Image (cartoon, rainbow, N blue to C red; front, side, top):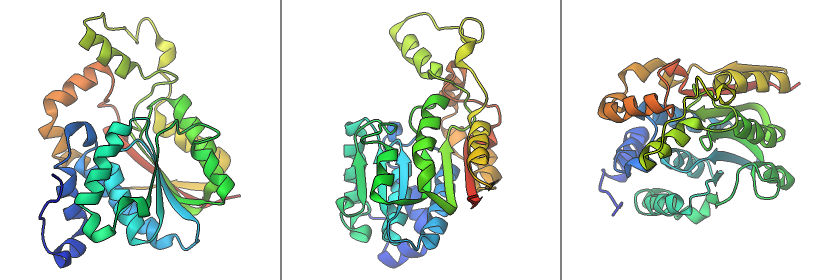
Length: 279
């Protein structure tokens, strides 16, 4: 089903991102939830970070399986790095595993060689991100796209921080959201499908809305490390021309009305930060 014919090996390796975007666009919608230019930004960061990762136990980390897994897996294989992915949906992971095998396998080998999928809570002290540090791993790139609440993101960062080194990059999707402990955008999406009343978050439950996430991540990293810098990534330079927002415009407008997307600071929908100096 996913063994696409998208050119010769020479053509694929000379136009890696073009090939990977073609694979991304053939995914089911529920797995293809990030804009093409965000996907490109992830590819470019993964390529750059892979070249920097000279330590034997270097890894890439992501929370939330989907289109990003294709990008991260490709460059993990290119630089012989393991990719660790957390997602509680084994059904999503099964489809992605099929894509990695059939669409990328002839170039990267079988996914079990580099892809370590964990069907568990990414913040678990026993099977989450923080458990990796016990094995001496160093993370050169992390991408956070799981439960879009600050409570969850902060726990992931707390587990990740001990594995970060100079030049490591921390990136996240939907960084312009502002949910604190409950993703009320998703809550209202399901309530609407069930025919239940929508919860007025601005009026009734303002405690679920806090500071925008990219600012909180920046503050967390600044408090933890001596020097960091925001990355002027490909998405920020090109988000206004992304075909995603045209192709899925009707859905995007509906998601904005429910709170699972935001038009506010859309250039920060994807954000990334580099560790310049540890202490």
